[in-house]
Every structure is written in C-alpha cells, then in structure tokens.
Image 1 (cartoon, rainbow, N blue to C red):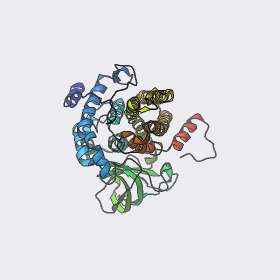
Image 2 (spheres, rainbow, N blue to C red):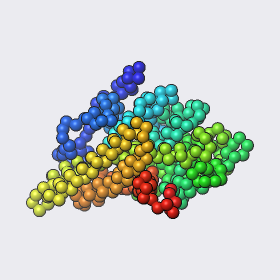
Image 3 (cartoon, rainbow, N blue to C red):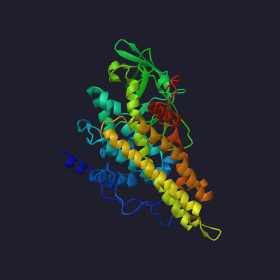
Image 4 (cartoon, rainbow, N blue to C red):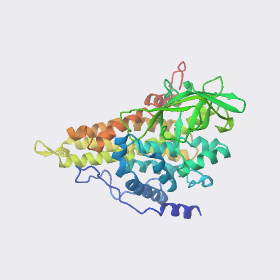
Length: 429
C-alpha cells in the first residue's frame, strides 16, 4: 500500500534530464565524476529516492527556476502560492506520518529532497522550503499534542500554512540559552513578550514555532517551544531585513507585546524547549549541508565549461594547471562533504547520536560555502563580478552557511565537547 501511494505521488511528474550548464556563457559540458552515475549507487538511496528526486527536479524546473530572477529582484517569493503547490505534490510531508498527510518515509528521503533542492539557482528559496519542511516541525511531530498536530502540522504539510522558526534574538543568535523572550503563565494562558530576529519566512508565515522562557531557573531547563498563530493581537512584523544575499527569502524582525494564547499551544513538556530545539538543530544541519551539494557541483561544472572556452594569452584558461588542479580540489571537497552527510544520515536512521557528525558536516558545508564560490568566481574574471552569472549570486548566498543554524564557532565548540577538549571553566552554548 505504501509503495503504491508513493508511486501515485511521484507519477504525476515525468523524468526531466538535469541541466549540466545553465549559464548563458557555458557552451560545453564538463563531467565531474565517472558516468553513468545514479543516486542509487549510494548506500542510503534506493530507486524510490531517485523517483522522489526526479519528481522534485521537474517541479523545480517548471515552478521555481524560471522565476528566480524575478523573485530575487522583488526581494520575496510568493510563499503561499509556491508552498501550496509543493504541499499538494507531497514534498512537505516526505518523512511525516501518513496520518497527517505525509508520505511516511524515513529521514533519508528528506535528505534526498534537500539534496535535489540544490538544483534551484538561488539559495533563498531552498532555505525557505527547508524551514517549512524540516526545521519548524520536527519537535511538533515528535512531542506535540494531537490537537496541535491537527491545527498546525496538517495544514503545514498540505502547504496551506507557511511556517517559521523563532529562536534567534538580538544578542542571542547562536547562544540559544541567552534568549530573553518570555511566556508568563496567567491562568490557563501564556502571555508572551519579547522579540525575534532573522526569522526566515517571518513576513509571510501563518504560525511560528517559538522558543521562549516559560520559567526561571537554569537556561537549559526553563524554555518551551510554543505554536503561535501569527494573526493574533500583539504580534508586529516590524521589517524585512535587507541582507547581503538570500534576496528572494524574506527575513523578518518580530515583536511580541502581551500576546496571549492557551498553554495547550505548548509543544510537549514545559521546560524541555531547549532540548527539543537542539534535536531540531540536528536535522536542520543535515538538511542544510545536503541542500548545497548540487549547487557547489554546478558551480564547478559551469566554471570548467566557461574556462574551457575563455581564452587568455593564446590558450584556454582551463589549460592552466592551477585552474584545472584547483577545480579538482574543489570537487574532491564536495565529495567528502557528500560522504559525511550520507554517513551521518545512515547513523541517524539507526538511532545513533549524530550531533557531533552533524556539527562537523555543517562546519564543512559552511567553509565550502565560502571556498567554492570564491574560487570559481575568480576564474570568471570580471564576468564573475557581475550579476549576469549564477556564481556571483552563490558567492552572496552561500556566506550564510557559516552563520545560520549555528555559527562555525558553535559547531567547533560542540565538536570539542564530544572530543573532551572543551575547557571546563567555560560556558558551553
């Protein structure tokens, strides 16, 4: 039955070959691996994963990539319109229970989806989709009440609601324990006061998975996650934050002034919000790493193709040993990133603690988010400094990888903690 259901989901899209080179200056293709290559060669993927990716790729080529330039210029994409289409196709419930409209598949299918999102020719839209699909809802799925799942999870999976995640604040970004937003008990309600910053989807969201202090005490045990509808009194969407990159994704600053809602909107146990959010961060970091693999690979391919037909001092730029050696180094780094993502996913499916590996892959993805676009842009010369080619957009967008979802320094602290080398007299997170 499950296989038939998945076949029905995926059969609405037919196969569309992946474009190797989308840039208008790229006239020849460059292979970065032995051919033929199929995702089913990988230990975590099967033919069903390939069907999912093929379906999503066709959707991207029809519903997203033709409009990316328009959305980038507008500094926003139409989240409700696009998310409804994605929800109807089943992409927001890949690893969610069928009871709530999901496909009921395991987390490796979410990783496959994240990887295929790298086919999108910007970073903002994949990030926004990731928040909806795999960052605002894991705690709700695992710890939320049946009432909350029906009210928030079901319409989010269907694409009827746009979701956002409210953790970061001014002065409390990667330092989650230091957030100041409070949810004080008044009778059977919470009264919320505070603010949130850097909230992806915040201007268009219908609800927010909000982390707030619900009691006094130890900062790791006084927080709760709360499902907050964004249309109730006291919530102000202050502004769309202007950013270096990720232009198509709206990023909001939010204020909460005496926002009142029932305590039943809390996810799981009171005081467990910090632990729940750390759990959500693990999936977010795996998702974030997987979502840039194809983007990095595409940059390397397009750069090789451009350098092959660009002449300088009487020969192709690609013929210079430094250029083709450097591209080989970059492709090697991408393959290493892919390997740790797949290994982390495999262990996660087996129920192992992958916090250290997830931190490592997030760290590596962030570092490559600076290295790959920067190196490739250099080989494009003056053309790379224009907005006419994807490499310049990637140069702006990928910089966020070392900051969002936990800065590089936080990832290093987590790794050190697992290694036993983090100083005992210093505060961790």
